[in-house]
Amino acid sequence: MLLQKRLVLKISKTLISQEEIENKISEIAEIINSKYKEEELVVIGILKGAFIVVSDLAKQLQIDVTFDFMSIKSYYGSESSGQIKIIKDLEYDISNKNILIVEDIYDTGLTLSSLKKLLESRNPKSIEIFSMFVKKGVSKDPIEIDYSGFEIGPEFVVGYGLDYNGKYRELPYLAVLS
Ligand code: IMP
Ligand code: MG
Image 1 (cartoon, rainbow, N blue to C red):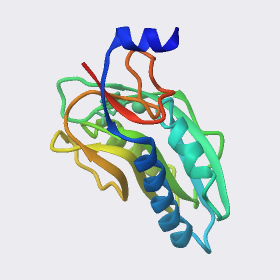
Image 2 (spheres, rainbow, N blue to C red):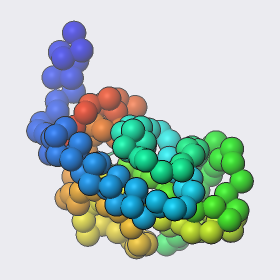
Image 3 (cartoon, rainbow, N blue to C red):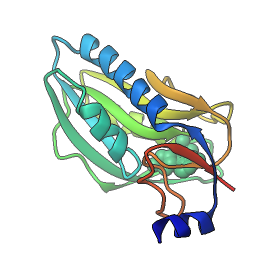
């Protein structure tokens, strides 16, 4: 039944396999484990898309870490910088904390650059960004991504947290719709 529904909605091809994703998460977790070996870290997942990457990463962290989540909506106006509205704010005070923002995908960069400015104003000790997927060449508001999982083309992708009208987030791989 589920399979039929998916076929109707046409997943055309797997772009990045489950195995490739698992290997990449391990690789990045290892870097984060070594970087924050002696420092406390607050991982901030951006809902909803980042819920899968945060949980996969979490299981491989061996450091002093806490998790918090934010839900934001981006508005793209005619101006070059995006506006974000907080739907759900953090629970913790991040002042003087090392934070790692975890996002599903970096597309135009507007969401992450506005979010970074917002969180910087709360005076954390440090901010790093991990985006699981980065769309090549479409960035309008480039900011530094400290850890990027995979660079992909401009096509619309789903799976591993990413949705199309709320669907497909549960796929354990990244796929292209046609
Ligand atoms: P941007 O970097 O501000 O353009 O926005 C990034 C957000 O747009 C991500 O957090 C996703 O929610 C969404 N997004 C961008 N590209 C895709 C895609 O290919 N599939 C699904 N969601 C996407
Ligand atoms: Mg998102």
